[in-house]
Image 1 (tube, rainbow, N blue to C red):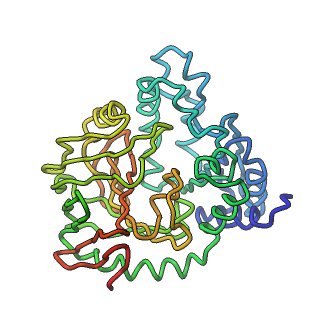
Image 2 (cartoon, one colour; image 1 turned 90 degrees about the vertical axis):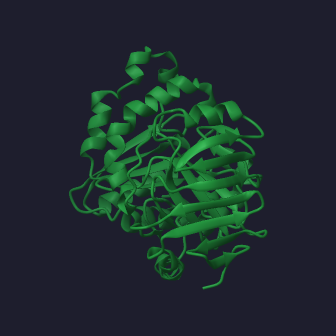
Image 3 (cartoon, rainbow, N blue to C red; image 1 turned 180 degrees about the vertical axis):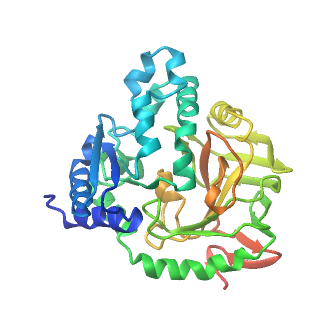
Length: 360
């Protein structure tokens, strides 16, 4: 039993609220070895629900078997081992816990190998995207995550549990008031320094993340109409991190829903590689609005940063079928825009948020 009671509360949240494990289910419980206290607590909670916990611990804290992927023949990267694919294709639930020893571990795998690996897994993730497989992704506090955020381990633990162990029923009710302003809208506009971008929402409605597939929750999100994005956006407040790579100062220009110009202050070559991954990578799959009251600062950790209260994020690539998204890509890269210093969100020409403060 973990000495920290918050671990048990966290496990109960993941099993009972986020996934709602049912008797007889087969639940994949996977995570890094540093997350052993949470892996064990989750497995106990799954057992109490009368379900099977199929536990898989990784050495590095990432789901990717990096040593194997570095050495395997390239054709093996194009499809997962059948026994691995069977797990995702047939499990009833998935609880995935990131607990990295090194947040930059994936940089040890060549970008082209990683891209082939992800493309091979893409068909088997369809149940995740459609939520036919009930799942939740989360993190366990490790020294590397704390160091990335500029915090001590204890400070990061307090931060993580403070952002996750909330009254999610109350948070859902609060966010629903904001999301309602968008549900019947045709267009949302985001305006800030160097930024003026319009996205179509006709026929699309919001999903509220309050104890769902991401933990922490604390956002509502849409899949914008795929050919609607027009204008420019500059992400100059926070670096964007994807697959262990950090890209600062991303600037994008959209026409007819496509990224037609892209630049970055650093690592621009990686940005271009991601945009050229496949046909869907230059379209938007998501617009998200961050609302978590426990997250007020940048952590260099997208799972938390996209929920910063007073921010919005756009995701390049794969759309979200549960909110009507149809774009298909192996990429889904959430990039966060801070609106707390003079930014605003308009819905059909009406300002609903200014400098991070709601006006509704």
